[in-house]
Length: 356
Image 1 (tube, rainbow, N blue to C red):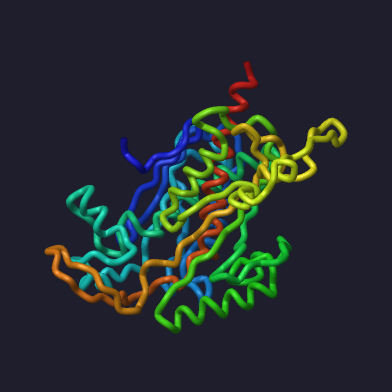
Image 2 (image 1 turned 180 degrees about the horizontal axis):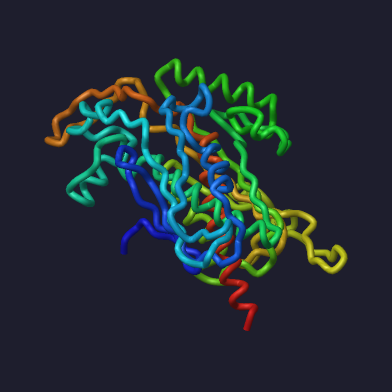
């Protein structure tokens, strides 16, 4: 089965490569009548685009979205929505000396093993550039969710061991680290700049919180909501781990502390804690859905590394060109988008259930 499509009732198919003509996405299953303007998509793409600060790659892509179909008079028509983002600042020559070797930490070898052919220009389909299409699709999912009163916010929880101690949503877009803690942001940026000066890279942790989702989203067995969310977020190339709610910390808790006790708040059922992260038995319970994801250090670094070429001979490689020393801040809108796509898909399925 091809691996470029995702979703059930709300489905997305992304296309394009890092150094091709562009990247894009087709979104099918959007309900008709949802207000959607190019700026709704553009504002999310602007948060992900390269060259937005000194701690990101200097590749100068404007990432202007073109809506090719599915919108009329500012409303979705219910037909497939096609979105295109053209590649404008390609420097494929930067990769000429890499086409006959397998870079450490990249997908060069595995793509070659699977397909027998690969686009070596900027990692081709394996490039993080593909995530621009996901962000564009996620903007549509956000509009579906917001029409039902649900919102999603993401931020950098940790970079290179520097952890945000406080969460102030107003601070997130005020610093290039996308940290909700301004004091931590200063240290995060220092660590990123130090890694860049060393020809190295750093990783971190992103936290996503979805608020206002109704109870009932997700299925009780194989399509548990946490399984769908984990699948979606782990499909982002740089993500190496996902946890929901208390996550791995649950291994250090007793059941008497972990269990979220229930109470009524007016006519709404609530829990006194949220160690389950808003999901019980694979189904949303109405509390905030809390997700954290581990983002690895970027693979493209300027330090010498040993590898092999396509003949199997050992070689030493230094990766030149324009690369992020840390992709955590730019990955925040990507993980928000994947969360939105899952929740919007589950919401539409749930509404279909309840309409009978």
